[in-house]
Length: 386
Image (cartoon, rainbow, N blue to C red; front, top):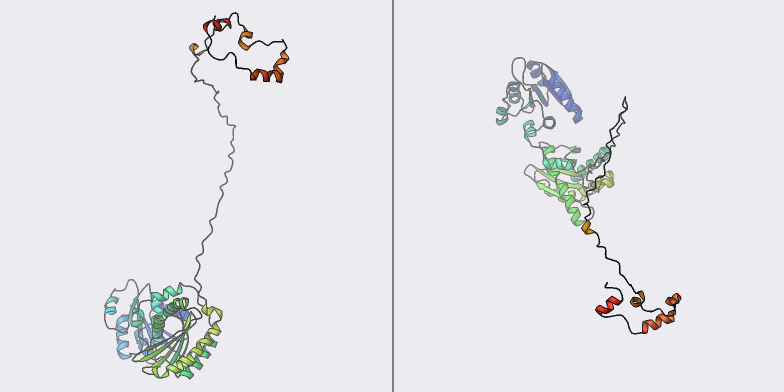
């Protein structure tokens, strides 16, 4: 029979219980939730067993940190979270600096830290370490790198069950590059699964860069040898990886079986994922098209006719007035003008001789006459000088 985890909320107003139910919906966790208003009832319920106690800061007689200290002292395996309001005393910094195993969180609560604390309590880990752990920047960058292809969890779970039996591991995990745990088979003990997954997730981005250099469909196998645990990490495509967990010093003896059966399991997981296992899609930034809007001006209708006064156009001549000195000087007429002496004698009296080509040829071949300088007498004879 599987034990169902129990969570107790201690708050006279019931606000803590509503916050817990919202977190359980997000985590999709089935548990037994007991909501009590007084500290005496909470201590009575703890006798029946519980993994987590979430208490309000202001209680009936004592404060939440006082009850949390008493619970942690008497029941070390129970995780305790204290939720304080904005008007409560700001002394959670004192508890944060001390060695108290419980956690004080002030509203507005960080949802990610609150969910990590609940998961840690469910797995038997320290809620203090889960809340104080900073978010991995590499995981945030991996979430912005695009969508992770979906996996059939039922089929992948069957593959991991067979792998655990073949390699004799303590536990086997299947996770994504965004540090999301999909399938778990076996018992991880005190190993912080979420922390190890968030630490190993950035290695998939490194594998993508190596794939571009080496070419082909890359696969990798990593081994981490610790004092308490040994962990093998096998990549299943570009988005998923498998963690095989052994007890300390137990992984070295199983290197051959992990290399054989682990690679076969990764191939089975890749077959379940499909072609999307090796496709890395970078999200495209959508640019909204520019909307052009045309402004329509409506005509204005006047009640009375409007007349625009028009001015008469005047032509202004700015040109300078003509001066009498600019006129050409009139010369006296020439008396006794002899045109025959000027142009030569047209013998024959036939005007058509001007168009006789033979005569024009003879005239052209004759030495030029009338060219050169004229004497004073010759100028008078032709009428050039009066």
